[in-house]
Image 1 (tube, rainbow, N blue to C red):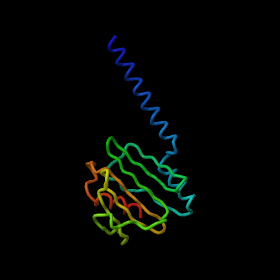
Image 2 (tube, rainbow, N blue to C red; image 1 turned 30 degrees about the horizontal axis):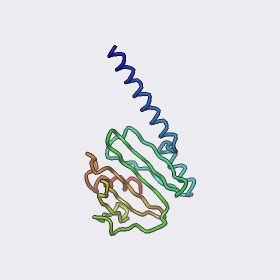
Image 3 (cartoon, rainbow, N blue to C red; image 1 turned 180 degrees about the vertical axis):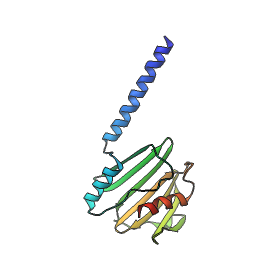
Length: 156
């Protein structure tokens, strides 16, 4: 009897976990490729999703926010998360808030910090777009600016 109850509880957890994930996908998330295409159509210019990622993420999704025309690309694997935001360059980056200035491969200045509540963050402007790349500060794979710079270099 205990086995049957345990089995039923397990099945219910799987069902609710899957329905929660499906609801999340239905809240504007789509594939990374579709989200990039939507953003490009909205802004009339081409952009690239990262071709370098610090690990092989099991879930990759994206969405475009209509209210501020921002693109969000989210890569997750277990407790590891990497997020890339792309938005129109409406205001300059507040570079004084960052700990380190680094150069990308094309000479673009990028700004790195570990922010509250605990994200590695690399921001840069390319053309008329701002890019923000975030990874959890608890990540085993992103431990400094170097990994985020590699992600950024794969975008530009």
